[in-house]
Length: 386
Ligand code: PMP
Ligand code: GLN
Image (cartoon, rainbow, N blue to C red; front, top):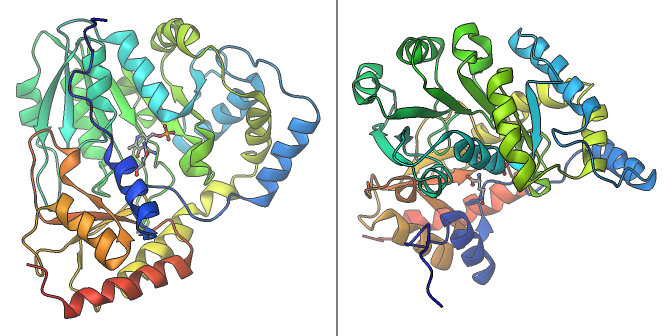
């Protein structure tokens, strides 16, 4: 049978590759971003309660009204904006689905979408499936700052979307207020949507404040902000998230959403709605993860791996340039097979391979897991890998 693939160069994503290798070689998995500790008992009890109470039928298409109401209050407290729970929020099957649906909703054949590399892996395939053309701005190590004059110059009449991600996976960098202001100026008066991937909104360190597009009144009118309960609740396997934006954009988003998802599982939405009413659950995340970040850095201090700063997400980059000239994919495979620690190479986050000899480590792990990994990684000090 003949058919034409919409993604003619199929690739398995790097997270799947490294997690399967970790299993195969029984390595400690500091690769794919997920905690190896469980979510809160209080949350699990709420999920059980609503499951047992029979909250097991369809929720309304944009998500449970109670949950949207809780989120609207959370947004008001966190970002000082009134967002309508009725018309400006839609609950999704994770951030990936929100991003995919947003791109399908607004990108047509030949539309240009500006993305910043290194970029999270799901943006480009979604753009291509929609018939859009990714236009790539390359951020450079070590700061990964964005030169907004260059973004301004990249904008053409075909530009329909700019995708940003803060806190940023995989670099751990943040956009600051000035960045959002520059972006606001660039899109102002143009039919360009900002798709803002903010799944790590609460994983932010060193007393920094998350700069959501929701904080900026004019920018918000042209933006869709995407969030994931997976990160905030230590429950990546639930695949639940939400999208927030002005009514006209969310209405169009729902127009597509209802035909590819309709609605997501209901008992978890009841549980999350109750759970998030106590803000401590997410307000303590910066301190909790900052300790883990610092602990891993301390544990690895006597290895040849050199850390780069991480101000957000649960990832930190480490350079291995001192010990090896291997490319980052080969080095990550070597670490998994020979040392027993799985990590993520940086080059898969680029269209044209850029290899800085840097790998990404996930510190959302029990302290004992970080200790075991460090013990293994110390073997690198005695090895000539080059
Ligand atoms: N965006 C970024 C930057 C991510 O790191 C991830 C992975 N958690 C996602 C989106 C997807 O989130 P979800 O698992 O909720 O689909
Ligand atoms: N977001 C996770 C990471 O960056 C991976 C999610 C996935 O496996 N698709 O590690």
